[in-house]
Image (cartoon, rainbow, N blue to C red):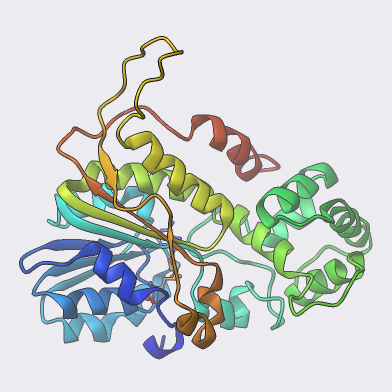
Length: 332
Ligand SMILES: C[S@@+](CC[C@H](N)C(=O)[O-])C[C@H]1O[C@@H](n2cnc3c(N)ncnc32)[C@H](O)[C@@H]1O
């Protein structure tokens, strides 16, 4: 894997947010091509643990490990268990955690991985060891389940038509290639021609389902709360509104309680485990967006860990039960 192929998004802003210090221990939960990790190691005489659920990202990082001369450890793992990984590999407690969500350019560009509607390949989309492939979902899920998932995770307004077209097409022949699915979706969506391929949103929804991405984000944030030391920073770059909503909700629920209202009964508030550095997320500069269109939808949110113990209440219960029933339903 060639490190030059994935341009790290909001690099300057993410490193500034983590404020790496000499002697610090940092965890990059989405190592990818290692762009953010390298910048962290360049910014201070610190150590880093890079995780990625994709084995090829970890093997591709061998050169960076050599370059870092003992300051970088890489492990194939999901960031939902980042606290266990940090403990097991001698990095806990952490001074900083970075999550740069989504897929890498290498994953998208390699046709055999099946993420792309541009290059024909097997309809797979697994970043790492997942049970279901995208083909399993489109060939087995009911029309209603597909429609709901494509509408919610893909934010596709014409999800009903797409789901119906998928179910009709698979009666003739089950889907096995990305090009077959892309053609079916394009055929189901008529409308004004835009720069965005009509298959984009359906492919995104399937990728999020296959890899249980919302569940991973929720669990990853809770794991970071357990692993960070007081004063440690958590920086999350998201590219999808549902992911950003989870991050926003997390920091809101873990932050200081709002001032009590005179009109409401006084309730006991739980201790704040994070302080956010800004209410609004940071976004990429115009210059970066011109240079890297992927940065257009990026949102960076940052929180600093307080001295309070990690909490056990789950701020995602209501929201995730809605989405995880999508991610976990069907024929799984
Ligand atoms: C956007 S890329 C990260 C790029 C990286 N920051 C860089 O500078 O090269 C996202 C990476 O996170 C990995 N990933 C996505 N979800 C993950 C998860 N739940 N656990 C671990 N890695 C994950 C993907 O395999 C991919 O390599």
